[in-house]
Image (cartoon, rainbow, N blue to C red; front, side, top):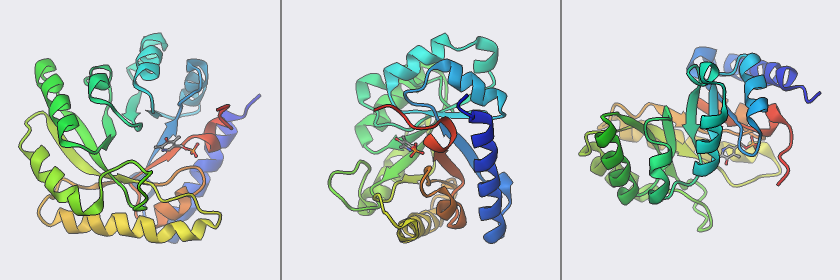
Length: 231
Ligand SMILES: *Cc1c(COP(=O)(O)O)cnc(C)c1O
């Protein structure tokens, strides 16, 4: 009816071609299907089409879906939290998600660490970087990333494994490229002193091919898989 399986195949083909063009292996790129605002039956459908990584944006919506979904399927899913995370919602994600893409403040890091140490788990995070430089956008500004990396390095139950970023919306997708390059170069620079920073979460439905060409290791694709979201 909505073609999730066909859409997934198309996205995977486009990822493969982008990998070919940039001499990368498809193994280097994880496709995260962004399921925000879609019901759990759509998630199950995407799971049956072969997807194992899902991204959610809203902590309570995630909590509800996590409880609702078939436990046998849930056990095989890698959940990614990709939305803005408030400190008081940290409890809904710690211990449940494989990766939080949106760490942008020291106090959030401390809260996540506190919750994670109580549960005796490790929370993997990416630092969300405001690569567009627009005030309205979330993420920490480029000049403050290294300080946050150093502060979180002191927290035992948090591990920062890379960076996440979003270019501004561009009519011409080619114009997103400099932003992806900027994030990759920042990652490369930080890796000199912080070798654990390997991941680059960048690229969405409109621009994931450019992101893959520029080194994305994780792409977050919603509408190209699930169809349009009723907002
Ligand atoms: C919604 C969302 C996506 C997916 O957007 P699409 O354009 O539907 O692919 C990716 N990343 C973040 C942070 C999002 O909020």
